[in-house]
Every structure is written in C-alpha cells, then in structure tokens.
Image (cartoon, rainbow over all chains, first blue to last red; front, top):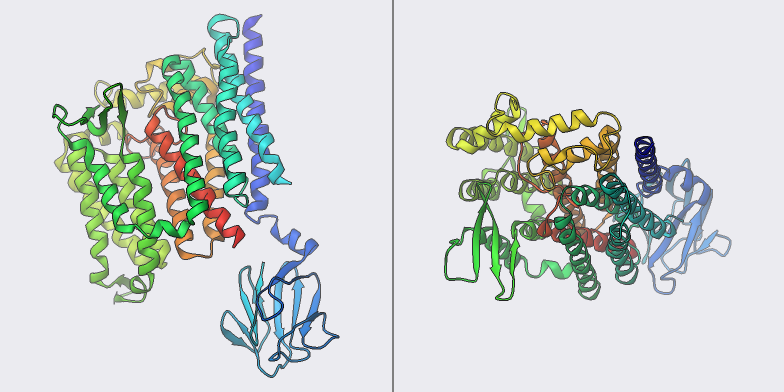
Length: 137
Length: 432
C-alpha cells in the first residue's frame, strides 16, 4: 500500500517539523527572558565593577542580600577612598534587585542620579559609588 | 546549553529538508535519488557555514536565530524542488552564495566594528537610491546593465558579464542599506526629533519642521510606486521609516502622521493607477476578478483548501496550477501539499526568528545597534506579513519575496546579509 506509506511518511514529516519548532521555541523562551525570573532567583544577579582604580573587572553575585563598602566586614570590599564603610545594600527578591543607600557620606548614584530611597535596578543599570562604577549584568 | 544545541538543530533542519525531498522523489518515481543527499549537504553547508563563521567572528551571538531560518529555507527548498527541479538547482547555488556573503559580512564587522557602518552614512543613502533607480535604465541601451520589466513591474536588472548574464533585483540590497542609513541618522538625530511638538487638542503632533524627512520619504516611496509600479517595495520603504522613527523617538504622533500619509497615498494611487485598482479588487473579490488579477489569489485559495489539515503530501498536489507558485505564492503551495499543519509550522518558525530579532533589539544598549536590530527585524517581519497576508487575503497582494522561502537569488543574498548583521549586533551587545 504505497498510498498508506506516503500518508504515514507525510505525517511523520509534519510531526518531526513540530518537534523541531518546539525545541527551538524552548531555547528561545529562555533567551527572551520568559524563564528569566526563575533563573534570577536560583542563580542570583551578577554585578560587575566596570570602572575603578584597582578593581576593574571584579564581579560578584547577589543571591540574597549583600552589604557593600570600604570595611573589611562588608560582603564586598570596595577599594575606593570615597566609599563609606558600609555604603549600600543590594538585595535580590523575587528576581528583582534592589539597591539601598545606607546613609553613606558621598552618596550612591544610579545612572547618574543620587538615590536616597530603595530603588529597583534593571539589567544594564550603572551604580556609582565614589569613583567606582558597577553594572548590573 | 542552548548554544550547544544549535549545531544539532541545524543538522536536524538539513535532515528535514532532505526527508521532504525524498518524499517528493518517492511520490514522483517511487524511488529516492541523489537529490536527497545534495539537499542535506546544501542546507547543512550553507547554515553550518554561517554557524561556523559566527562562532569565529561573533562568538557571543544569539544561538536561536539560525535554526528557525534553516527550517524555513529547507521547507521552501522542498517546494521549489517539487515544482521546478531546475530552479531548485539554481536555488542551491544561491543558498551557498548567500551564506558566503553572510560570512564576509560577519568577518568585515568583526574586524571593523559595527560602528564603522555609521561612517559612510550619506554614501549608503546615495547607493540605496542608486540601486533602486537602476532598473529604470533602458532595456535596450548600450550599457552592460539593462533594466528589465517583469510582470508589469520594473524591479530587475540584467548585468552583462560578457561570459554570462546575471539577473538581479537591486532593491533587495537597497533595503538593507536604507535600514543601516536610517539607524545611524535617527541615532544621531534622536534628541532633535523628540521634545519639539505642538499640541492640537488632545493630540500631540511633532513640530512641522521635523515632519520634513517624513514627507520626503513618503514622496520617495510614491516615486517608486509610480516609476517601477512596485506596490510592495513602496509600502515597505515607508512603513520601515515610520516604524523606526517611532522606535527612535517614542512619539505616537509619527504613527498618526504616517498612517494619514499612507491613507492619502493609498487613495490617490488607487484612483490614479489601474494596476493598484486591479490588485484591490482581486483582494476584495478574487473570484469576481477570476479572469483578471484575481486568478492567482483564487488558485492559491483553491490550493490551500485542497490541502486541508495535513495536505496532499509533497509531490501529490497540483500547486503548479498557481501562477508564480515558487516565488510569491510558495506559501499557498506549502498549504496545498503540507496542509494547515505545514503552514502553521512555517508561521511558527517565522515568529520565532522575528521574536529573536526583536529580543536582540530590546537587549541592545547602544542606540544605533538597537535601531539597526529593530529595523532589520522589522523589514524581515513586514515582508513576511505583506506576502503571506497577500496570499491569505488579509492585505492586497504585493509582489514581495517570502524571506528565505521564495525562489530568488537576490532576495536570498539580501536576507542572508540581514541575518549576518543581526548576529553581529547580538554579538557586540553581549560582549561589551
């Protein structure tokens, strides 16, 4: 029955095409960040030091909550004479990243604007402390 | 993980194309011949080649753009092979040439950087206009380049290379140049274009002076419509411009202005041109205009209707009854032989490729890169919409190639370069 065989092959072909489209769609959905929140909660958000006198290229990952400052006891030590001992807190909650200035002397700037209240950070935002600029990755 | 999936997906796409060709073979002669292996090799070599080039020259590029496009190209190739094996042989070469040019584009950008595209802005615009005007050259002139009139539109040039003749649609490359020009122009002009506007009641309109370029491009696209009788390129040019202007400024006034200009231009050209009227009546009532322009649309509908849910099977339908079934109407031919299921799969692949392109634009931080990625994806999406919409009677039919699917060398080459540019943008944005 060649007719039956051809019908069968045609349906197999269409099935394979759909399997394929499904595979591509799955990998694209992660690219578009549709699964992004889950990943952010599991893996944390990476913050990189993009401009600094001595720390360029350093980076750290915020999974829960981190205090950043010039003190040795801060979770991330900031080698910058203009930074306060405990300068700011970064907290990750439900895939969001929030920056909170801890009453620093010289202030915290997000994209060039000084912040005094907790602010949500997005991917690509620049956080400046003294002469150091960090970027949310 | 997804990055390593890409080669597997590309091999899979090539295998699907080969499987489809074997079904065509089987339906025609009961056996399978060398075409199956050739198809597998061609699709794998073309897209695998771009993949390897991207690994080398743009390693951070998104891995999701090539696989859906490889599936689309494979699907189109099956249908071209089924309808016209001779043309399929040519298409094979065009796939390889397109992939080679994509490699060249990737290598050039990796050496010079995307920003170098901004340096020659005015040259690009002049080149784009020049390319668009090339088909207007006399068809019996003494020059080695002659314009050709095909199906009532003047889009083709014939280049005499003394040893061989090459037919080419320069508009396909002009589109890309135009998008690159617009991206750099708007990236520089953005502050001037926003902010200055006038309020009329609740409507905010841009300052009249700022509308100058809008009007200029509108006149230019009408000029194309008049001189080349090409509805598709004219609409494409203007819509891309309006969309990029809107994305660059975020001002809805440009959309309102653009919409009004399209309405005015549409009504005026409908009254002035016979061929626009025929297209519109073929769109509204293809069976009423069956003897005239409606014939093609109606045959397409018959074909897709016959195809029903899962199609007649490759090689078993009669898509050859549809005029231009391997170029403008390849979607209807797919609908006949692979059915509704096949067309939805094709649409899905287009949607995935377009979503990836817009994703690249969304993630870009550099204004020029963002506008470039958006413009390129928009051109790709709009062409897909206009021609599939034309076949499905959503919009009047415009003679535009379905990207990566229709038979045609110029379109394939242009679209391969478009994809290479998108890959380059995503690489540069991911690695900065």
